[in-house]
Structure formats: C-alpha cells, structure tokens
Amino acid sequence: MNTQIITPAATVLIIRDGQNGIEVFMVERSNRPPFGNLFVFPGGKIDESDNDSRAQSLCKSITDKEASSLLGIENNGLGYWVACVRECFEEVGILLAEKKDGSKLNLNGSEKEKYQKYRQDLLDDKISFHDICIQEELELLTENIAPFSHWITPDIEVKRFDTRFFIACLPDNQTGIHDGNELVNSLWISVEEAIKKAYAGDMNMIMPTIKNLEQCIGFESIQELLNHQQKLTNDDIPSILPKFFKKDGNWVGLLPGDAGYDDN
Image 1 (tube, rainbow, N blue to C red):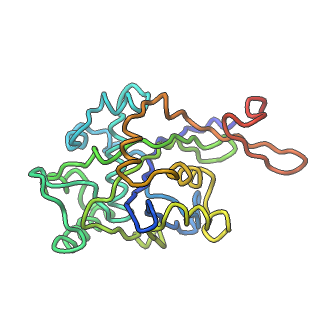
Image 2 (image 1 turned 120 degrees about the vertical axis):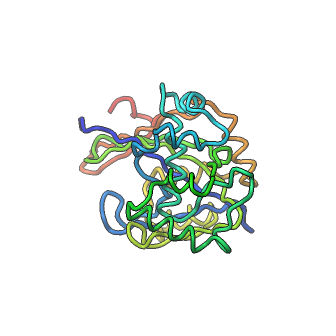
Image 3 (image 1 turned 45 degrees about the vertical axis):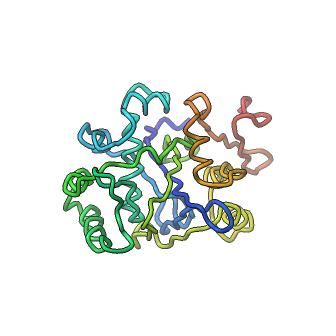
C-alpha cells in the first residue's frame, strides 16, 4: 500500500443557469502530470494561508466550526472554502466575492483590468490573496458555495489527494478564462453535454470528474442544486476511495458499494 502523505485539496464546480439546463465551467490542463491533458474543474491543494485566521475572517456567512462540522473534521474546515475562492481566482479569474457594502464586482466591465492585474500579481507572488481582499474591502461569497462530494486518490497512485469537491454559483458580471499556463483551455458546457463528450472520448476525464457531473443531473436550476446541497450534513457526503486491482491481466476499478469492493 502507498503510505505517502495524502494532500488535502479543494475542487470547485462553478455553475450557472444555461439555455439547456445547468452549465459548468471546465478547464483543460496542460500535459504536465499528475493531471495532464485532462478536463477538470478549477482547484488545488490547501495552502497554509487558507487556514490563516486573517483569511478566514473574510468569510461572510460561515464559521470555521460550522465548516469543519460539515466536512467531518475537527478544525480548519473553513480553509477549504477560502481555497475554493482563491483557486478560482488564480486559475480562471472568477472571484467569488463582493464588496463589504454589498455591491457586486464587475470583472467583465469597469473592474476587468484592475482584477486582471491583481490576478497576475497573485500568480507572480507579488501580493497575497488576503491583501487583495483587504485593499478592495471584499467579503467571500461563502453562502454561494456548498460541499458536493469527497474523493480520495486510490493508493496505486504516486501522488494522492484528499479532495473535497464543492459547487459554487457564478457571480454576476463574471465569465472566467484559463491562465494559459497550467490550464490551456476552458469552456462553459451543459452538464449533459460534458458527460456525453466524456463517454464519447471527445473530452478526456477521469472517474471523479464524470461522477461529479452526473451528480448534477435532475436539478432544474443552480439554486435548486445549491439549496439541496446546503441541507446535507457530513453523513450525507461519504468519502469515496476507488480501488483498483488486476484481474486476468486487466485493471479493474471499483467504488464503495460495488460487488467485490470490500474483498480487495
């Protein structure tokens, strides 16, 4: 068994209402490992700064105690919410925040250039995410973010992640664009179309990505989906650890609940 440290991470399905149902923002990673050339959702590992009390003080509607309870951990749960917001801004330029006075950001218009510079300075380590929020008097829109699923990388992999998936509603006056470095493509796509392209081989995805897309099926709007997820507790979102083994020379993958899962 692989005993390497499992790295905590947060991944975000940014969703919006589209003409053909719920749409999700997907990005294509570069050919660099461990997720080379895959279509995924924005996200990354939890940084130390995400668990800093200064960053967590920016969260508008949830405490660390409440967040930790939702994730079934003792503390630092709120760091996952902070990481969701930070990673979205770094990777795709979507900022899940608003002014403390309640006014909305306009990243498609009057504030576009200013926040593009903030984003580049953040990527170049010239400024911290916390300092951006303080300078612009921002609060994080944590009320529009909800836990969605929990996947753990199987032990056959060299790099392992304990990944919490979240859904987040796209703020008004924002669209998103990949960074052109780690991410080489991005698009808004209906959930059904993304699943169809994945199974047809037109969009390269791994199992957790497809399963999270399938979890969106059956909801008429993003608000309905968000309301549903916000009613759930940690017990309603169990961790999923895929297991892989060889049978007759071929790799077989199983999920919890599949026949034979507990035997391998």
